[in-house]
Structures are given as C-alpha cells and as structure tokens.
Amino acid sequence: MSLETEIKFTLNGRPVAVRVPATMKTLTMLREVLGLTGTKYACGEGECGACTVKVDGKTLNSCLMHAVDCDGRELVTIEGLKTPEGMNPMQQAFVDHGAVQCGFCMPGMIMQADYLVGENPRLTREEAQRGLEGNLCRCTGYTKVLDAVASVAEKKCCGRL
Amino acid sequence: MQDIKTYMTPCSVGEAVKAMAAGGVTAFCGGTDLSPQVESGARQYTATLMNIRRIEGMGGIAEQGDSIRIGALTTVTEIRRDPLIAKVAPILAEAAEHFASDQIRNAASVGGNICNASPAGDMINPLLVLDAEVELARWQDGAVATRRVAMADFFLAPRKTVKRDDELLTAIVFKRPAADFVGYFRKSGPRPALEISTVSVGIGGRMSNGVFRDVRVAMGSVAPTPLRARNVEAALEGKPLNADTIRAAVAATSADAKPIDDVRASAWYREHLVKVFTEEVLNHVLGN
Ligand SMILES: Cc1cc2nc3c(=O)[nH]c(=O)nc-3n(C[C@H](O)[C@H](O)[C@H](O)COP(=O)(O)OP(=O)(O)OC[C@H]3O[C@@H](n4cnc5c(N)ncnc54)[C@H](O)[C@@H]3O)c2cc1C
Ligand code: FES
Ligand code: FES
Image 1 (spheres, each protein chain N blue to C red):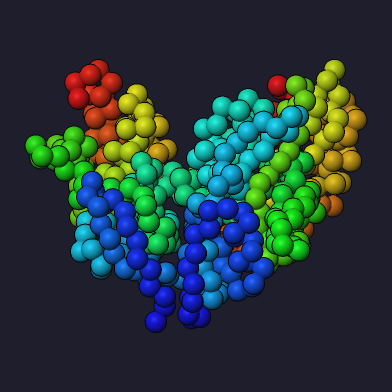
Image 2 (cartoon, rainbow over the protein chains, first blue to last red):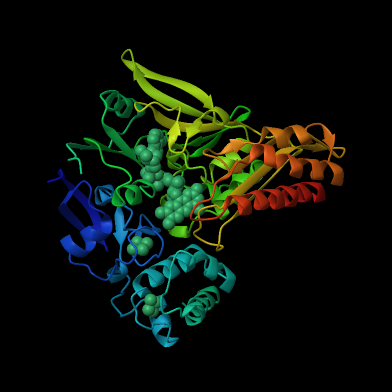
C-alpha cells in the first residue's frame, strides 16, 4: 500500500480534511473518496477535459493532478456551481440552448466555459472556441455549446447578468 | 509499482535539494508529464515524492539587470499572459499560445517542460532561440550550490539531460533581446489544438539594414533532442536576407534535421515540413 497523507482544502466553499494515497489523482479522490461524481473520468490523460475542475480560480484536468497537491487550495467542481437560486447562468444557458446530448462531457465543458467568461466577460465566439479546445464532446455538439457560451458572454457584457 | 515512503512539500530550495541529495526523489510540479508516464508504465515513482510547487522564489517572471529571469514553476498560462514577455520575447508568448489546451497550460510549468526533455517540448524551442541558460541547484558541502548551463548544451537524448538526479532546475535566464531582435515560432500537428509538435521551427536574430545577424535557429521533433540548427544559422549569419539567402537556408535544413518515422509522422514528411516552416518563418522576418 502506498503512503497516505492527510490533506485539508476548501471544496465548493466548505473545508474538508481527507486522507489520500500519495499517488492518487484528484479526480479519483473527488469521485471515490468524497463521493462527488459530477466530475467525469474519460481519457485519464489530459486530452478530453471531462475531468475539468477549478483550482485556485484556474481550470485544470483533475485526472493529471495529484490529490495531495490540493492541500491548502481552493477547489470548485460542477457541484459547486449551483447558486442558492438554482443553476448558475452557464448551466442554465446550456439547458436553454439544448447544448446537452448524452451529457458526459458537460460537467467539464460547463466548468471550462464558466471559467472563460469569468476571465473575460467580453469573450468572443472565436475565443470561446479556442478556450474550449481542451474539451472533447463525443456527441460532437459543439455549435450549440458555443451558442450557449456566447449568450452568457453577451449578457455579462451588457450588464444583464 | 514502488511504494512511496515519503511525501514532501519543501518551502525552500535548500530544503528540496538537501532531500534530493539523499537520492530516490521524484519531483513534480504540474504533473502533466509525470502522471501519464506513470499511468502508462513508462516511468515509476521512487521512494520519495516531492511536490516542488510550494518552493518560495521559484516562480514569477522578472527583469534582473539586462536579463530576464523566469522561475521554473512559472506556468505556460503565466508566460502566455505576461506583459514583459509580450514586450521583450514575443516568440515565447507565441509558443505558449500554441501549447496544449487552457487546462494543461494552467497546470504545466516551464521547468517541467524543460526537464521532461522531449524533442517536442514547445517552451524549449523559443528558449533556444533566445539563447537561454538554465540555473541548476544542488546540495554541496552543507549549502546550496548553483550552476548555469546553456540550453543548447542541456539536452543529451530523449528524456536525458546534463542535469544530475540530485539537481533542481530553479530558473531560466536569458539576456534581454536587442531592440532590433525579431523572432518567430511555428509548430504543426495533425490538429490545431492539444497536439504534440510534429515539427517546430523557431528563428530569431537582429535585423538591421536588411542584414540578419546573431541568428539562432531551433528545431523540435527532428532529432533525438531539441536542437540548434547550426548549418541553417551559418547560411543566414551576416547575410542580407533575400530570396537567395532564404533558399540557401532552406537547403541547409537537411544537414541539421535528421527526423525519424514514428506514430505522428514519417521522416519524409518532417523533412518537408521543416523546409516549409523555415521558408515561412524567414519570409515573416523579411516582411517585418
Ligand atoms: C494532453 C497533453 C497535451 C500536451 N501538450 C503539450 C504541448 O503542446 N507542448 C508541449 O511542449 N508539451 C505538451 N504536453 C506535455 C506537458 O504538459 C509539458 O511538458 C509541461 O510543461 C510539463 O510541466 P509539469 O509542471 O506538468 O511537469 P511535471 O509532470 O510535474 O514534471 C515533468 C518532469 O520534470 C521533472 N521536473 C519538473 N520540474 C522540475 C524542476 N524544477 N527541477 C527538476 N526536475 C523537474 C519531474 O520530475 C518530471 O520528471 C502535453 C501534455 C498533455 C498531458
Ligand atoms: S479524463 Fe481528464 S482530461 Fe480526459
Ligand atoms: S454530450 Fe455526449 S459527449 Fe458531449
């Protein structure tokens, strides 16, 4: 058995403490230790973005990140996007635009899209496309995804969000 | 798989290299190379796993006298967005722009890219053009000892460098390019995003009165290591940059680029791409 280490971090706004093997990846910790199965495992090697989470405000692939590296940091997963009023605007836009097909890539896609408009409220459609290059959709429904992202960026830009 | 006996997160270079002196340390920063390599069985963890991300003084981009110093922990995203880099070394920002995806760029460190020593490392190519040096630290006689090695002398073979196992790469340093320095980078893969370079070409030098000087040419994925293309450099150095010089430089690529066939591309295709990119980049310099 590999060495276990105790780590403490903030997960979706709440403090957590957990013991994890030093070799475990953040994705496995989220899904199998903490029971948050919204973040998906698909390729396991950084190619598809299904496992995208936010760490200290920046998105990354949780399948590549060692869980021990979460210590002292701030994580947000798809479960943490929800607001007390309901879905976050990006989640709602994906629903409104019918951007979801089988849904497997969606948690990662929405995390990355939400990060992109957070970083740049004036995000153009082309910039959204570039920013989502690390997110693959096997159902290949990219057009409606871009429509959804563009609609949120537009509302943010003209102060309606 | 080897059992990990110790996990450590040193806060200082001294603490890190002291532990590395004892041997058996696997260091990681973003883990974007290490994780897939361990997963596929290409590599194994050793007794000590060391997270170097929290070491103080190993991040950030700063001007130091006439040099630019980039801490090894600096991410590709930080390089891509840094105003100083955009101003003095846009060739490096350009390479960061075409690096993997947002999520990988947010995690990947420049030090990890260099230490991984892949012939396709995209931060390496522009740093060779900038004639950068790496700073290596180790524990010697009870203190931290550092040395500098030119990037051009750093790589020995795929995944092999002159860096000793007990050395930590702490920073990359290069002289602030002259005002008349121009440099461009071009890479290709089968698709525009998330692609390991099939071939990359970076060219930089000082352009004044139509003459190209202090020319440095770097190539990726055309040999066992990233390399400086000395024959192409010789074809360009001190010459007026015109159609004839560009033709000579393109012809010289076959003396430097010795690519192989692999899963990503054939040797023939790579040789062809190097020629096309060399011509394209030089025309770009000319048009500037
Ligand atoms: C999907 C995907 C796409 C990618 N696309 C690209 C691409 O387009 N271009 C490209 O160049 N690369 C690409 N990579 C490779 C990788 O992301 C980069 O090489 C990255 O810069 C590595 O940095 P890291 O911090 O993640 O390294 P880590 O994985 O943490 O470390 C890499 C190696 O370097 C050693 N190391 C790290 N830092 C130091 C240090 N300071 N001192 C001593 N040793 C150290 C580690 O021990 C390890 O052996 C890609 C990887 C993936 C998974
Ligand atoms: S599962 Fe992490 S990128 Fe595909
Ligand atoms: S909706 Fe099915 S993979 Fe994207």
